[in-house]
Length: 481
Image (cartoon, rainbow, N blue to C red; front, top):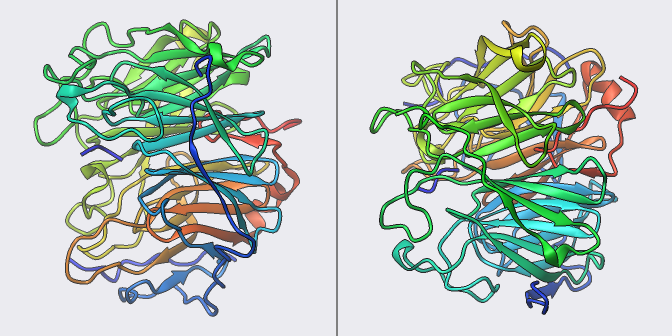
């Protein structure tokens, strides 16, 4: 999400079913029986030609909700991204993060809540470590810090937690980065002794302390796994020596950093969504990523937001967060090619690889003008022989779509709640929707954690895939495929 007509009759046809000293965080362990999942509504409706009622759930027959865990104070701010490890899901929130036990997906339970404000608390995990992004100027690096004006910035960057005890996470280290950390991507080192964090940030200003233009780089943090308190910035590579796309004021974002990066470590490949540019990088040298191809869409894309590879590494899907997560763009006025996904085939080898545009994908349902709806975070579903992903669309809900044919993508399932308000534009809905070990988990910005079950013949092979750990922007290769 960027810092900052009605649903028509166009409905889709259903196809088929520390620092040296410890930094203390406020940890609230959930009492027994607290935050019990709400039962999922029964009898979800088919897609229709009318706008669902306020908070009414509609879905295709092959995708149904099986659980919801509402937000709890003090973590009742905006929910953000998700990460997974074993039987746990970790959910970011602008006020900190929540650890869920999802061993029974139909009845998740809260294991712990950590109060540690700092937007947007983008999240990833590795072994006994959890990483959080802070992208708002803070008075200090503690979890008791206050937000301050950008002209008075003292700290923003990455926070590191020890999660060896899931019920009692400990804040152990902070690393300051230029312009903060809007998002970060975990990249395993080839020797297995450390991990890297590719930190994406943007929005420099002459008056922004520690974030003056130009800002055409990312920050790379190295985290020694045996000594995580020695984590430090080891490189700040400039990805846009020419300054990147100059943008169109009020319409298309200029490149001044990146919003998000997805890496495919087993292929030494990364895709960066960088505001005005989409880039392909060679990351064989983890501390010196190289841009090998760059694309722009000066017609339809406004803000390059995120990226997803297919399993073969021969395609990449970029998302356009038109309106910055604050506008109604899933309507007839905006149309099907803006605020959408763009599918690119990756051709060639080595440094000769290029990205070739094939088509756009956008949910085939119009939303009301009171609903914030645009392409947002999703993940590949590990399906043998096909390219299928699940994706969040804020108030547009959750969409499952097939891009096996790059030029002709199609939706195969959906689930959504009706408008939050019928009177005014209201932000809400699914921030991230990811497939993990047999279920889809959606972190709803307002409603909490939703768990969905997909039952479709095209995705049955995904049931065979089990991850020990899953950070979506660190894309795994399905073993043996």
